[in-house]
Image 1 (cartoon, rainbow, N blue to C red):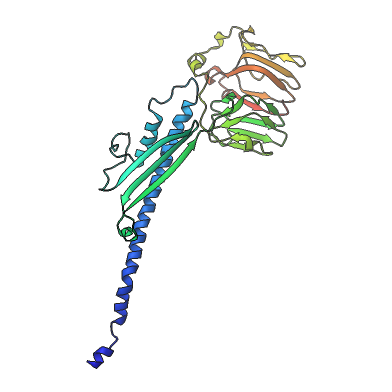
Image 2 (image 1 turned 180 degrees about the vertical axis):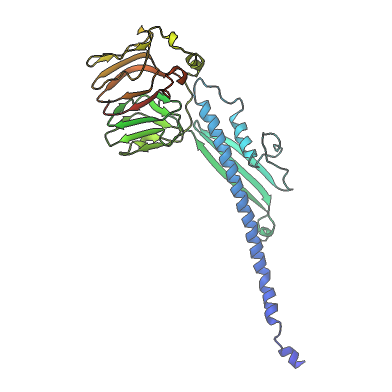
Amino acid sequence: MRNMLRCRRGSVAFATVIALVPLIGVVALGAEAGSWYVTKTHAQTAADAAAYSGGLWLACSLQTSVTCDTQSLDYRGKEFAAQNAFCNTGDTTTYSGSRCVTLPSGTSQTVTITTPSATRVQATVSQQQPTYLAKVLGLSTVNIVATAIAEVDTLPYLPCILALHDPITFQGSPTLSSPNCGIASNSKAANAIGFVGNNGIQVNSPSYTVGGCSQTGGSQCNSVQTYQQPIPDPLSGLNAAISSLKTTDFPDGACPAPSGNSPVALPAYGSPKKCYYDGSPFSNNTTYTLNGVYFFADGAISIQGNTTITGTATLIFLPAKFVKASDPGASLNVTGNPD
């Protein structure tokens, strides 16, 4: 008996068992907290998608003379949350592409779409669920919440220069001053608005592009809003008519570029001639006044060599089928030192 009481065999195993009880509890509690983190990540993805979708809806609604989505902002936001498996109770099959499922007992989800301001959409996604091991810490339920806000950037002025498909490029040392109307490009290219040259390029105009901005000198891209939503074509109602234009629709044919010193009034379509410009009509060291509508039908439009252009006008680049077969279409490049 005395030897049995003095025997220490198995004492380490006994101590290990005693130590494992709280250790396993801590590990299990960590695993439960880890599942909360995974749910939080999924909720944030759903909130981001919902806010972005709502932002797109809001961006369209802020445009004038544009037909937007027939569904509401709230619907589109909750639709994209549902596609990421988060729905209000009872909405599991309400939205197209929904990945929501019937939740376990005691678990519920909420999706809320609000507009804190005229240009902001906020999506809040939450999931409340019961706890298990965390109950020993006094937590019977946990509410996992994720919030995302999408803000629509708007130009202070509508663009007076809008490239629907191609980049806009400035080269040399030009000066562009249009503080009350903007420059925009719907191109998705990295150089949707590009500055090629040096610090001499001066642009005083709200600038906006769907793609990126590139520069080889200076800091012009600092004032360009990049990766924004495309601007609707304000002349979309004329697309059918413009695409069907033929050379015979311009009885005076190609307008010759005017000659003379500054200033020069560039004749618009119908005043006094119904013609189009076959190539660039802009010469070096000349000031042009533009008022009216101008059609350009052949090649790139280059403005260079101390040329100044003023006035109010609409410039329309005719579709490629109107242009000579050897030319890819009209585009705009500003080079040299124009004003």
